[in-house]
Image 1 (cartoon, rainbow, N blue to C red):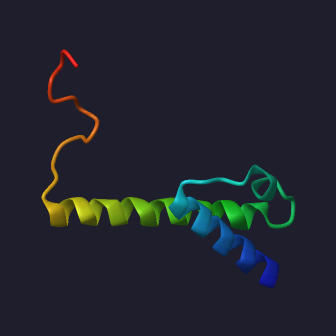
Image 2: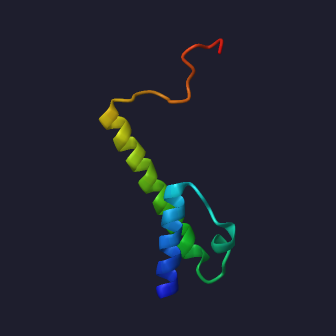
Image 3: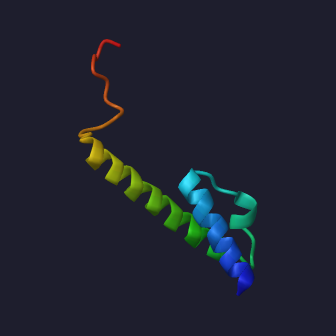
Length: 70
């Protein structure tokens, strides 16, 4: 149980940081726990960014060019 919690937490931290450790993810014993944590971390990061965009009043895509000729 402790290994599963450690793997989940490592996945959550990696997910929030946008990083994936393929060696842990493929581990037969704790890989599934790591991947669940990874997904939870990515979801948490998404919600944080969404909240920050709302607070700052950012709308639209950050990837659209202001000048099409650039």
